[in-house]
Length: 75
Image 1 (cartoon, rainbow, N blue to C red):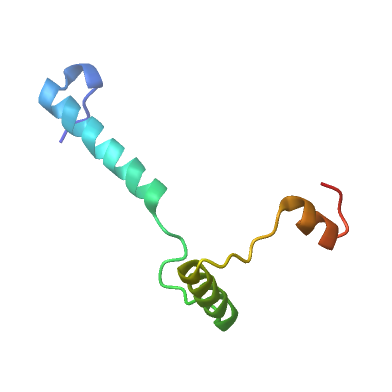
Image 2: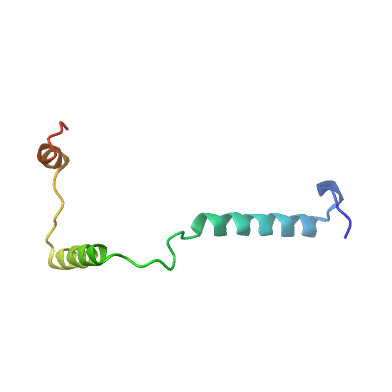
């Protein structure tokens, strides 16, 4: 197939080109670079703990000022 310029495309060909390009870009943006990798035992345990806390209404989060104090930082 000979190369065409955009000006030579029909409206349907142009729309198909745009649709294909947008589909490729969206797929690239939504691609998961970690797909297929396994979580470490620590990460699994931490996620399970967070799920249990959320289910029971407990929260392990701290206010920024407290976290900063613990880390010897100023908020």
